[in-house]
Length: 278
Image 1 (tube, rainbow, N blue to C red):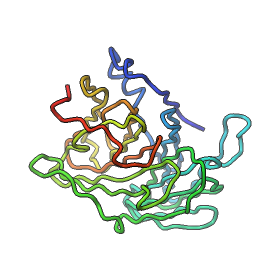
Image 2: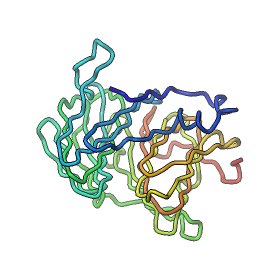
Image 3: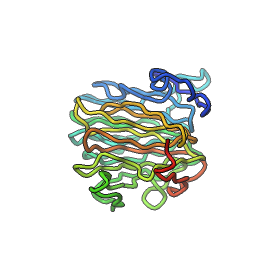
Image 4: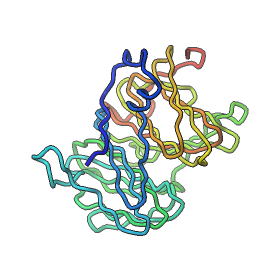
């Protein structure tokens, strides 16, 4: 059921790795395909990263196929799920028969134990992030319009942005998943300033809102030995706990960040001064 499995890596593996090998280990592409649910698996916090594009039909979150002892069981039997509509049209997500309309940029928290999750919407594109859970928390719809954003950066520094905290303890309870969306202001291209590291959490970035000819230069690795991956619209990247994560694009864009690990503390980060980077 998983198109690819990404294995956990040690920072020493960065030395001598080619650009193609770097992309193979951390870049997640072709997530959104019309009429399909596409899922990949990362050993970092056991993330499932996926997309669902109904394209006018109805798509169902698949059941487990592995290991053999779990075959046929619901994918969320021991997992929670975050869903964000990054499409240009409203769609609906039904969880065990309970239907929710999701406008563009709205999100849904789906608890552990949900058995039947279905996606609809001709112009909806659903980004999916799932991690293991130890208990079920309430099913919640999260409207972007209801979230008061944190405003960070400045146009003078090319990093003015609004940070929407969607799934965090003060907005939506979860077992492990933290999720939000950052929207850059026109004229800004840099994200995640100052850059930082989460030693006790892995993080996934999904970049979107770019034109076909645009690119993101995503930086990763140890602060004193940075590498970069060139990314296109609707690509995702896996950030291991030991890695800096930040990026710059050829125009303003949005990105969804998702974390899981030992805690739900948004501020648990080791901030790196920009002068420390090499």
